[in-house]
Every structure is written in C-alpha cells, then in structure tokens.
Length: 355
Image (cartoon, rainbow, N blue to C red; front, side, top):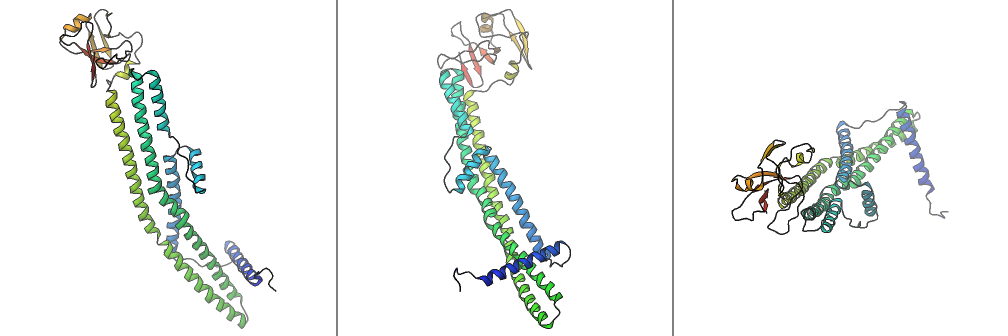
C-alpha cells in the first residue's frame, strides 16, 4: 500500500549508494583503498577553472570597492539586487561637495572673488559626480555583470558536474573493491556487471565535465572584451575629469608657482611692494626663487616702463568687471597705462587683468 506515494525501495537504494561512497571516500583518505585518477588533461582543465573562479571573484569584489568605496552602500545595493528591486538614487561624494561649495559661495556672495570661485568649483565637482555615476553604471553593465554571471551561472554548473563526476568515481572505485573481494562465481559475475555500468557512467560524466571545462577558454576571451570595455569607460571618465579641471583652472586664472611659498613667509620677512597708497622706503625682497624690487612710491612705479611684481597685503573684491579681485599674499604683475587715474594701476594674474 502506497499511502504517501513514497518510494521506499528508491530511498533504500539511495541510502545504500551514499553509504558505499562514504566508505570508499574514508578508506581512500586512510590509504586503505585504491583511487581512480583523472587523466592529466582533465585535471589541468579543473585546475584552470578553479583558478579562473578564484581570481574572477577577487577582481569583481575589488572593482566593486573601487567604484563604491562605501561598504554600507554596497550592502544596500546587494540587498536591493537580491530583492530584484532598483536601489534608490543617492547623491555621491563629488556631487555633495559641489553642492556645499555652491551653497557657501552663494552665501559669501557671488560677486566676491572667493564666493565666485567656490560656485565655479562646486559646479565642476557636480559635473565630476555625474561622470562618476556614468562610470559606475557603465562598468557595472559591461564588466561586473559578465563576471558575476560566470560565478553564479557557468561556474556553478561546472561545480555541479564536477561533484557528480566525483560521485561516479567513488561508485566506480567501490565497484572495483567489491569485485576484488568477491569469491563466489555468482558474486563475481554480478560485481563485473556492476563495474561495467559504473565505468560507463564515469566515462560519460567525465566527457560531460571535460566539455564544460573546455569552455573556460571562451570565458577568458569574453572577459577580455569586458576588460577592454572597462578600460575604455575609465579612460572616458578620467578624460572628462581632466577637461573639467582644465576648464575650471582657466576660469579661476593661473596663480604664480611661488604662491604657496608666500603663505609660509614669517612676519620678519621683508614685504615687497603692496597695492596700497602707503608705500614705505625702497626695498628688495626675495620670495622663493623670485627677487622683487620695489620703487619708493607709487609715482616712481607709474613712471617706470617695466612691469613689476607686487604682493597683495589685503583681500579686495572687484566692484565691477573693470577691476581685478585680489587675495592677500598673492603675487601679481602691476603696470601703468597712459591716461589712467593716478590712484590706480593695472594688475595682471594669468589671463586675468583689471584695475
């Protein structure tokens, strides 16, 4: 009577097979039973597949870290992926920094030199944030997804068939052991029949596994194309960032190479000519590798036909487009223009000019 539609005979047979494999495996480990070795070609394919799996996992995980350094964000994306839902769009670090800069520049005043510079830097940071987002999306689609598909798809199939091959080998070796121990003619005949069946099943499974493993070469070729796509995405990203920063530098104007060293001058260092009506006696000051000679007063400078270098004493925000905004301690070029008001000079910093 089969009340629960339960195949007791099959369960018993499966339990017997499992026990036989366990005994064979244990005896092999103890050196009490012989083990059928796989051919060298198949062993090499298995080793190549395992090596591919290990390095693919490492490259995939580190690429995820590179693209998303925040571990909490990576965990959130993983959870949403497993739930088959789209993760909410979040502002990234460059975009957040850019927004802070824009807000600060707006509060300081877009008409001030510092406020204007902050707004321009903020806009550039936001553009970099957009480029960063595009890099992540492109890399995830063209590089990470194929690697993940191999680990979660192709390699799982290989691992399944490899395990099945191991079981067939244990069945084969267990049959060989039983044949050796068989004494009666009837028992020997039954054992020989079992050996032929297990040998056939083992050979068939070995061929299936070999065909799957030979596909690893095609996997490498596919991953190579994906790697090229990843490199191209990075190249596009870095080229965009470089162009954004180049444009920003042009907007802000270039500063003299000794600007940073000026900030480290001590109070005892002689101060060169400053844009102020109060000008002291003639002096000569060394600023890094630059030697600046200052005239004794503003009129002497105006009468000089040569451009002079001057260090700014105080910040100054341009009142209109004809004036030049200044930052304390920066060094600029100053010169006079015929017909200009006697209280003013022309200043030049990089490609920026103004009164």
